[in-house]
Image: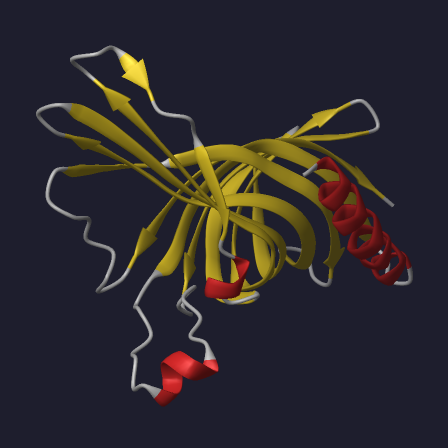
Length: 230
């Protein structure tokens, strides 16, 4: 994960900064926090006895913004996002845990509206499209036998061939910026909902008339960051 994260953030982050550096006034920020993810859609209901839970994980990266008017800015970000879903099944003799771990490099492009709420702080909201590239897709599962107090060895399956490499969605959010030193401390909360199914059919499945599952990403993110204006 660290290798993918570094490469993703370095390449697109440097592109973001160099793009906005040609436009003034502009700002650059580093952000990091936690995300809570699940899946939604017509096929997102779990089997009998399975209880859904959020998959939590790292969420963060780099951003650049160009202030094109007093209140409005266009914001381009490069974020590493850990999405997917976790479910647990409770049965008479055993419990079963399954985690769908889908990690993405996100590129949200949003319009940000900011208003001052004090001499040293601003409140902002933002919205726009979110294009993502799937870096990895793993299905982990484990079984715990209650009567024998024994746990089966964990199994891990690469499911990249079963998931779409690209995702597209909409990001909505808001937050605060507080003056601190030469820059600002940022806090933002955002929700990203996918509009494209993560399910991918093989050519053989298509020829047999199989239908694509309606499963889309749903993600809530909380991030702290530091922004410097130029």
